[in-house]
Length: 372
Image (cartoon, rainbow, N blue to C red; front, side, top):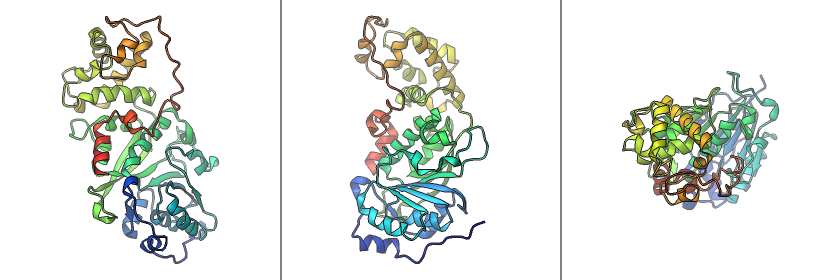
């Protein structure tokens, strides 16, 4: 085992911010961690010793988490930072790492993560052993969900950086969002986010960091979440299709699931609603948060079966009748004489930076925008 390459003595993170005259920007939802014990506990959620591991850290800011990663003997660390004000201090840190640290001055939502990891560390998805790669980040609240949905989309296709295998991630989220990520059937926090994350990944709620631990302190506590892609997905359909179905079913969260299912079809085609319920075998009187993953699996397969027969249905994403009239007549029959648009590949069709389009202003996004 190679000797541990600890960093030389460096100014504290608080001192670094003073030296470079940097303050957290409210519009970027920035909150910094200074306490090395709290930071160390978060990094330990990956493993207590990072020897041989290659880490991609999202939003390092002044570099507190980066220092902990390096001191735990990580083989390499690639940091992705959008805010130019931190680049100089990160460069100072990188100069002490004997080439183990690389800086990418980019927006993580546009960043090609494949360049952050060595391709020779790739592991087949069928292997139980994970690749020696890991994402980490204390994410701003306004970035965490768009980034997660971007990665979930890639995971569902084994594409992009996930061609390298089942790369785990240790990330921070608003506590309530973290609780929703791990929520089980019949729990009050069960929502769209619970389903779309859990059908693809194992999600573990590691621990809570109290808001007062950050500078400046946010109004909420923060959850540290570990995310590991599953070897076998519980629903064998593209992320976009699954998210579309789940989003509509949860649109009327407190209503019976039949009401949400009905929004997937033209208002005049209740026969399709009945067909989807019949094929899936789901109780139409059950509320969405009481449904199990197997129920959503069968609902998604039933929806896909109907779309295979009536392709126009998959072109419409609305809760109102007006949009349906572009592709269906008043009686709900498909308009075969319209020029159907050619849909781009799903990765191109997935705009992870547009939170409203991505989440349809779901309750998760509404919480974040109000508290960030």
